[in-house]
Image 1 (spheres, rainbow, N blue to C red):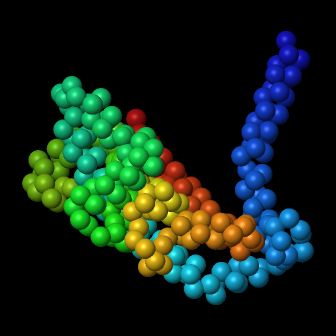
Image 2 (image 1 turned 90 degrees about the horizontal axis):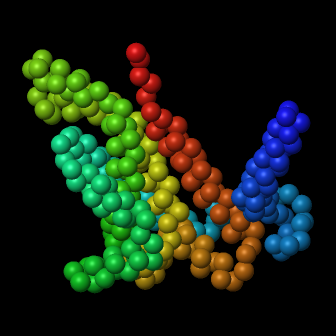
Image 3 (image 1 turned 90 degrees about the vertical axis):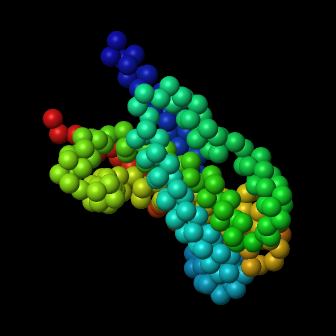
Length: 268
């Protein structure tokens, strides 16, 4: 029996490492090639940082990076504010409401709808309102689907919140605003911050919605759009370096989001 378990465990570990290799080896290869001194993607010419230095002197990439930062920060701020109040409105008023599943389905819709469908829908909406396209339209578009993610993260935090604390604060004479500012917000702030980091990551990486809802010219070009424009002429170490930096920022924000979103420990 023990030998059978050992064989089963070995098979599972082998399968696990094969899955890890399938997922991460291409990423590791991309990172390695970003340090390739040779300008050819298939010929190794030694280790060099010159492609990262080249990024720092590429005006088109710097402009796209600035646009991405503006879009991500603005969309994250809007999504955090609206998503947090949406989560509070749902959780605080959910008791006795038999339409919870319908609300959950509506909230999940922006997360599960294909990006191409949401991109076309937003573009049609802007055209209907005769709103010109640019960074502002990308910010609004990113905020639309980020609100759902922030709301989901904050609701997870609220499910572990002791609402009797709010009643105690009000009973002691605190106003509703003071209770929100001094009691509720500090308690759920890690969830809000986690949702914000997730929202920031999604905005930095998002391409399809930004591509459909951007204006013409470099003024509304984000980093994913710039990478797409560059890669049409072939993959170069400079593109690998840029992709590595974007991936590093995304992974860092995602790990921070997961760490902050851990459910608080309850003391018995």
